[in-house]
Each structure stands twice: as C-alpha cells, then as structure tokens.
Length: 448
Ligand code: ADP
Image 1 (tube, rainbow, N blue to C red):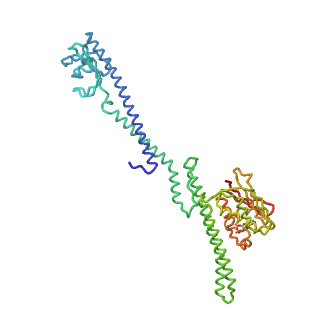
Image 2 (image 1 turned 135 degrees about the vertical axis):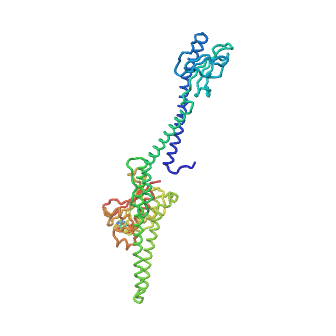
Image 3 (image 1 turned 45 degrees about the vertical axis):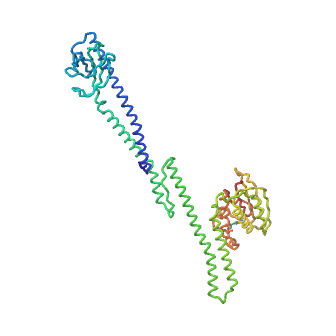
C-alpha cells in the first residue's frame, strides 16, 4: 500500500487499523466467552433434565407424558427400534431428536445436532443410555441453540460494532489531527508567500507553549533575523556604491577637465590625483572583500597563536609619532586566523596613532572579570575621544565622525566594522570603554 503523504491521512489510517485490530481481538474474545457461557448453562440444564429422566426410567417411575421441565427443553425416551416411547410436551409427536445411541461403555454423550427433520434449529443434546442392557432405551434431553449463536448473528453484530467504533476512532483522529495541524498549514501558507523582497511578514503564532507555537516563534525569529540581514546587506550595498561613487566622480571630473582644457592642465598633477583616487578605490574594495570573507573559513582556517608575540611584532613594525606605553602579559594564547587578528590590531593602532595627542597605551592581560578564560587587550589614546552616543555607531560600516580628518588620512570608514567583525568571528567582543581623556578600545577574546 502506498503510504499517504499527509500526516493527517497517515495518522487516521494508523488509528483505524490499530482500533480494528484491538477491537477485533476484543470482539473474538467476547464471542468465545458468550458462546462458552451460554452453552455451558444450557448444557447443565439438559444434563440435569436428562439424568432425572434416565433415573426415573431405571426406577420405573417415569410418567407419560414426561412432566414439564426447565423452559424449552425437549425430552424423549427412544427405544432400541428407534421409536419414541415417551416424551414431554415440548417434544410430543415429533420424530426422535437424534439417531446417536450411546454404547454400554460410554452411556452419556453431549453434542450439537443440526438439520434433523422436524427440528428447524440446531440443538444441544444430552443422550443417556438408561441402562447397560442391550435393549436399553435412550433418553434425549435437547435444548434448541439460540439463533444468535447458530446463525452467525452474534459475529455479525460484534463485527458491526467493531467497524462502527473503528470508524468513530478514525473520524475523531481525522478531526483532532486536522485541528492540531491547522496552525501548521497557516504557517506554511504564510511562509510560502513570504519572499526575499517582503520579509516584514510574520507567521501566525498560536497561543500556548506547545511544539507548534515554538515552531511559529522560531520561524518568526528566523524571519526577523533574515529581514535584518537583508536590510543590512541592502544598506551595505547602497553605502558601498555611494563610497565608490565619490572617488570615481572626482576621478572623472579631473579627467574631463584635463580633456577639455589640455593646455591649462598640469598633467603630472592630474595623474597624481588620479592615482590617489584609484588607491582609495582599491583600498575600499580590498576592505569590502575582507569584510565579506570574515568568518567564512570556519574552524579549519584557525591556528594556535601566541597573541603576546603577535602584538609585540605589530608594535615593533610601527613608529608612532607619540609616546608608546605598553604593558603586555607574556604567553597569552588564542586560536584564530593570524592575518585577521593582525588586521584587527592594525586598524586599532592606526586609529590611535591618527587621533593621539601625546601618547598611546597598549595593555594585554587575562580578563579577571570574565567567567571563562579570556584575554583583554586595550588600546588607549589621548585624542578627541568618542562621545558616548557614538560608541556603537562607529562600528557600523562607513561611519566617520570626523569626516575631513579620517578621509584625508585615507580612512575608508570600514576599519572598525572590520575589526569588530573579526572579533565576533573569533567569539570575542570589541567595545569602547570609558577613559578620562581620549578613546579606549577593548578587545576580549577567549583563550585556548
Ligand atoms: P576610518 O577609516 O574613518 O578610520 P574607522 O571605522 O576606523 O574608519 O573609524 C570610524 C570612525 O570612528 C572614525 O571616522 C572616527 O571618527 C572614529 N574613531 C575611530 N577611532 C578613533 C579614536 N581612536 N579616537 C577618536 N575617534 C575615533
């Protein structure tokens, strides 16, 4: 049989099959018990009546006709010639109840006799040979079997009950599963209608805490994140094109000007300006590519790194215009992508150098406040600082607080965004902390 594709149909079929099996077994048991109870009760009546008559035959006290006995029991005394010699009213004038003549060895027989001429129904018969003598009469006590048992009516009735109950079980299952799955269907319909261009819609959340309610909530949470990510991507694409457009426009204006007035043009200056703009374009594109790649390599791209050595080497490469104070705890190790961590340091130190007035301070230590072992690296300068309300905004792409200064210094506005993405990709954080003067960036990374 092909398995139904819908959960509703499948559950209904399973419930129906199981109930037919269980109720069927129950019905068979009931059938057997009813048959057993009815026949054993009839048997005890026929036995009693038969024995009483055969006792009277032996004593010679049997009257004609045989006095009435328990309801509906037919009693006959049949001679060896097969002729009915005596009977009670129920069996009077009828042919013998049975032809079976018990032997002298086994004087008593219980059995069911069917299809006897003159007896429309099957009978439960007790045949007793009155004596062991060869010409002994046989006493028959017979009770007609209830129609219920002989015609298959009982089985038909039980079968009908089983089918009706199973149909009821199947119907209830169908309704209940349908009601349970209705929210799922609503969620599915909504989800199928939601496209990348319209992520603002949400699936209906059924009340309560059950699995379906949780599914709906998770779906909505995923949609919310997707919407946020798509909005960010869109914003990023528009910011990126805007950023790229500015140097391209400058380049174009310069070149057009030179083409229109070749005689008034200082070619060398035009080329130099063009190179500056191309450099800018190049660094923006390099940063954008880096941003797109951060966190895509997975754990395989990571290696064990002595972070103290890494910071020391990066500081040694530099020649800051201001006083450099350092306090680096030795032998602090992390797992990470070396090139990215160097880039992160580079961006923080570049900014510090750009803004510091008299000093830069770099400290590296284990973070005493973190519950798991973490390092904390702070880069502090005594420049203009970053006002409290801007401390999250500066990590966004293309944010520049001090446009003239950072652009003239070749900043793409992506440095801190890249630095934070790298920190996040290494399961760490990058934040701005309070300091009496200037700015303090704090990087926290889990230790190996
Ligand atoms: P940019 O390429 O412009 O330096 P960043 O993402 O590195 O871009 O920095 C974003 C902005 O954050 C900068 O334009 C500047 O306004 C501010 N900023 C970054 N570092 C510092 C600092 N050490 N002191 C003051 N302002 C800073």
